[in-house]
Image (cartoon, rainbow, N blue to C red; front, side, top):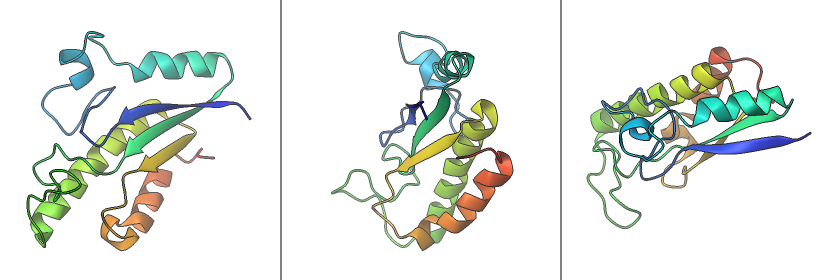
Amino acid sequence: MQKEIFKSREELGKNAGKDAGRAINEAVSKTPAGRDLIKPYVKALRKNDLKVGIYFSQLDWSHQDYPHFTRKKNRYSNDSVRWNRFLDFNRAQLKEVVTGYKPDLIWFDGDWDYSAEQWKAKELSEQVRKWHQAFL
């Protein structure tokens, strides 16, 4: 099976497509491209019968509600309100990627700071499959 993986979101909060969780679409307003970079990528792959994979980093050091400012510097610890607000933000971005581009697979990264339980990984997996059932 031939496939491609596109990095939609990285640890520093940079996004290549639309961005449900921020006021500004970074690919449009903060890059020379000035447009959604994922949409034409997905279209070209589908046209050539290739599977579409999208990389999505769970952590976001740029978000004020993510506990870690960097791997070595923290914003806060043990604040469930802020953590859950970050998870809501994270899920909103992921939902936009999954429902907007309908990838065949999602490649998650950046989960090393917390356990699967803290990331609510089981619920995340179930939710992603509800948003789009055609995953590999």
